[in-house]
Structures are given as structure tokens and as C-alpha cells.
Image (tube, rainbow, N blue to C red; front, side):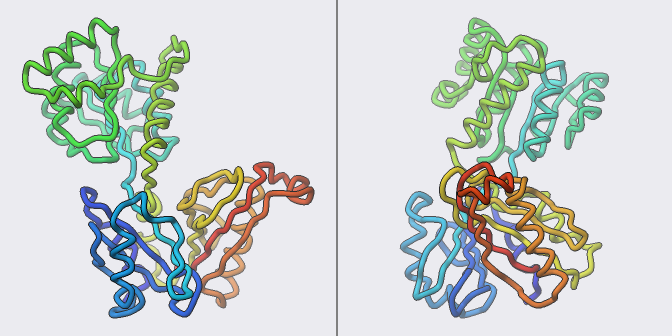
Amino acid sequence: MGRLDFYRVVSQCDPDKKNMTAEVLEGEAAGEKAVFSDGSLVWESRQGGFFTENQEQFGRLLTGEGGLRKTEEIRGNRIFCDWLGQEMHLVICGGGHVSIPVIKIGLMMGCRVTDLEDRPLFADHARQAGATEVLCDSFERGLDRIQGGSDTYFVIVTRGHRFDQVCLEKIVRKSHAYIGMIGSRRRVAAVKEKVAEDGGDPAVLERLYSPIGLDIGAETPEEIGVAIMAEIIEVKNRIRRTCGYSGELLREILDPEREEQERRVLATIVMRKGSAPREVGTRMLILPDGRCVGTIGGGCMEADVVRRALHMIRSGGEERRMCRVDMTGEEAEEEGMVCGGVTDVFLEVI
């Protein structure tokens, strides 16, 4: 099998299914990988290998997300398991003043950002703000082109309640992680009532986030944008679905213009204790010239990991190694590792 087959399979996972990757970090089967979907083994790097031999045990572990830790010990092999979410998709209905900071902050968070706006001038403003995709059309037709999903976050910030109603009627029928709508309580209540009369699910409407955004006393469009994105972050972290492999990361790994034999290193946080900066499952790709795609926390900790990864790339020897970064103690403090935790980072040449 090709070196990149695993990443191709991950990129093609059905977002409507519960997908999990598993990789043997240490032990006799080190380096073997597998992909599970809805509890079934759908791909493994060595046919009939470790994961087939232990499929019954994995079947018990795959009964639910909460029942599976990030690391497992099976027959002396240390396994890293990662439930996959999809890249966050931020869908903004409206291209006015509030939309612009929401677009910019969403992009900073690594979201794919789609803006819907029926006025060409305001659609251009959304493009200038950097939106990944701008649909300049009626809100009805624009939303017909949005599939939705468990990692889709809808923000309704149109210029009037009749447009809010049109958007909400479409959105409540789509799969989503979040729906937020701007407006006064009276205006929002009237829109919700009308949508319910037209067949909108009352349970979905009850979960509508409105007034939109965390209550931080926001007044300017920029402050309101911060409040909206803060609420979305809060919802995302409550769900605790990690992207696993971001779209940006997979696009870089699978870039057809890169030479197949070019050595790169994927760094994955597989264990953390204390106040380490990023969660287990966070990934970063280190390229031969030292550039990185993604981040595992920045600072001296990340610099140390990059240094070790570049040594693996240039030496042409090690294919994988476990790297422990201890950010406790006086030495770490002098180096600027101020978080105070311990992190295991798995490095693998791809």
C-alpha cells in the first residue's frame, strides 16, 4: 500500500458516520493503522494484521465515544485512537457589518467560512474579508446549496426579520452543531413562532442561540463578532468533537504537486498532563524547510518538537519516535515553557 493511502481514506470518510482512526504507537505492530466507521473496520494498513486479529476487542471498545480513551493497551501494543470530526464549517447568513469580524475570526480559528448575501456590494465585502466561499444569491437558493452536518455552525445576521425567517426555516431542517440568530427578543420570538407554524421542529427552535453571542456587553460590530465566535467556541468545546485531520492538513499531505518521496513529519499530541497548551489529538505537519501546517501550541515546546522532526527528516533514519516535552520545573520555566504540563508527542515520517 502507498504511504498516503491512510490519509486518502480519512479524507473520504462519510461525515454522517462515527469515524475513528487507530494507530499502533509502540509494540510489535508499531506503525500499523486502521480506520473504523460506525463500529466496523473499513481499512487497515496491513491486510489481516493487528486490527483484524483484535477486531473483537475493538468492537467492544467502539460501542460509544465516551467508552474509548485516546490511548489503549492491547497485547503489549500502545494504541492511539481518535474519533474524527470534520473541519468546522461556519455558514453566515448576511454580509453586513457584523458579518465581517465573524468571517475574520472564523478564518483565524481554521474554519471553512461560507457567507450568503443577496446584495452584490455586500457580497464583495465578504470576499474582501477572506470568506472561503461567497454565495451571492437569494438566501433560499444559497441555503439549498448548503448540506449542513454535525460540524456546521449557522450564524443568522441578515438585515431584516423576513430574511431571518427565510433562513431559519431552511436551517432548522438541516443537520447542525449550532444555530444563532441576531435580533431583539421580541423580533426573535416572532420569527420562531412563524417558523414553528410553518412546520419547524419546536425542539430545534428551542435550542436556538438568541440573542446571539455571549453576554459581554458588546456594542460595536467587532465586539459583537467576538461575542458570537466566543459562544461558538463554547459550544464546540462542549461537544468536544475534534477535527482529527483538518482540511488544511489533509490538503497539504495529499497535494499531488508534491513529490511522493519527500519526507515530512506529522506530530500528534497523544498524551497531556497538567496545563499543556493543546488537547490530545492536535496535529501539526513539519515540512523539510522548517515550515509547519497547524500548531501544537507554539512557543518553546513546539520549537523543540520541530527541531527533533527536522532531524528525522534530514537524517533519513528514524521513521517514528515518541517525544516527551516536560514543561514543569525550573529549567522549563527558564526556557519559557510557562504552561507547566507534560506532553507526549508522536512523530512519524510520512
